[in-house]
Every structure is written in C-alpha cells, then in structure tokens.
Length: 307
Image (cartoon, rainbow, N blue to C red; front, side, top):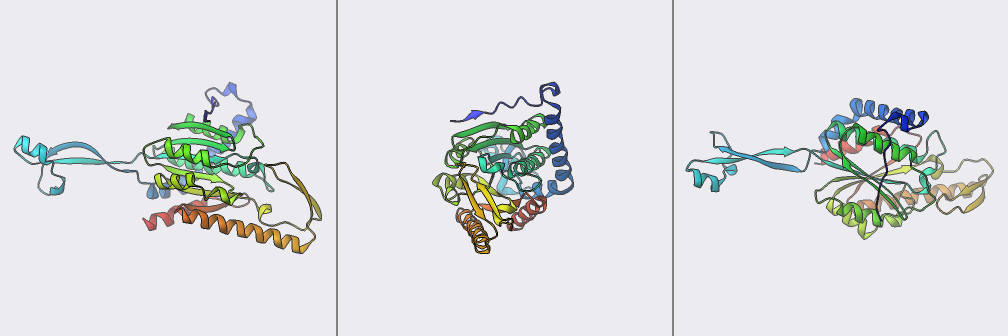
C-alpha cells in the first residue's frame, strides 16, 4: 500500500520547531554549495534528457538535413518542409530511500539515515538547478510513502524534512513492492537513485528489481558505516540487530572473531556488487565517515566517458 507523504513541512516557519527548521536549512545550504561548486556540471553532463521532442515544421533551407524533410507536408504545400525538433532536457529523478531500522545506525558523527538525507538532498538540489522534477519514495517492509515528482524549493525542503524527521520504525528492508511501484509510477524513462545499506544481498537479486532496471536508469548508492565493516578491540560488547531487536554479546578481544566479522563484511559487499552488476545497475559505496561528493563525481564521470 502506498501512502502519500504528509509533508506540510516548510509552508510556514511557525509550523516547525526552531531546531527542526534549522537542521533542514543546514542541509539545504550544504546541498546548494556542493551542487554549485562540485556536482552540477557533472550532473548535467551525464544526465542529458530522454531525447528529441517535435517542435514544428518549417520551410526547407539550404544546408538543412534532407532526412528531416516532412514528405506529407511537402506534398501538400508543393515546396519542401522539414520537421524541427528540440531536446527534451527535462528529467524525472526518483529518489528511493530505504528507511528500515538499520538506517538508524551510526558509529561516527552521522548515521546512515543522515548520510542518505544529505546525499538525496544534493541530488535533489542538482536536479532542481537543472529544472528537473524530483520524486521521493521512502520504503521498508510494509511501508511505502510517496511524494510525487515536482520542482521547486518548497518541494526540496519537504524532501529533506521527510528524510530527516519522519518517525523511525523498527521494520526490515523490503524492496520488491518498492521496485514494482517505481516501475509503474511513470511511463517515461526516469533516473532512479536506490539508496540503501543493502544488508540483505538476496533482496537485490529479485525479479521486481530486475524489471525496474530494465525500464529505468537505476543507480544504487550503498550506505556503509565503519563499524559494519570491522570491529574494534574493545572487549565484550552487545550488538543489536536494529531490524529484529535481537541482541548478541561478543568478545571483540578475540582476533579470530574480528577477522571473521571483517571477512563476512567484505564478502557481503562483493556479493552485492556482483548482484547489481548482473542487473546492469551502476553502484557505488558511500560511508558515514568519508566525504561522498568525490565518489558521486567519479561515478558520474565514468558514466559520461562510457556514454
């Protein structure tokens, strides 16, 4: 079931607590600076629109491409006419953000949820600066909240608010219904940024995700935290699975345990990359303790060279 997100966030400053409004504006300002100084040119180079759109017919002029001649109009008018096209630059950008309980986790200054919000805000800002439309789908098991594609600053602020302050829920990641929804939400080929920690690799290799990748241009942004990749030597600690609530006590002084933990994390990342590659979905890893803009720029530049 899809619910339209109730994002009446920034229509009036009085409707929001000062600390919430301040945080939303901070993310917006950071996204604007990063978009203008780093990402915007690269974004426009790699995402060029869906093709050409018919504009008008006009009389043939010397030097025009004869392949553009409209023979029906030419026959009626008795003189050559050509079809004139313009580039359909407007894109539809869909941000699909995993808001399952594992996104709450963060062992540094920000959680994966915070990272997802900043990444999505930057992409939305770049889209807005390019006059593209942006839609947001927040998804998890049994949860889909949809904000239809729109333009404008007010819509951008609504997106940021939903990502930062929508109530958390202890639910698992579930991609099947979200992928089906995104596949069918628009007939126009769109760019889908799938933002998740992808902790359950099996969710990637799903027929619905495969179909989504066939219809739309899907880019997977995998969220990572350093403590999910390796354990520090700090003695006995309690580890909680955010999505199930299960707690396990482990002795991190055990070197073999730390090695096995790190090995499992590396294997999971490799399996995820391979699964996405099989679906011909570009993917990159983003980390809560590292700048993410250089990674996005490297991805976009690689796509530009490939195209």
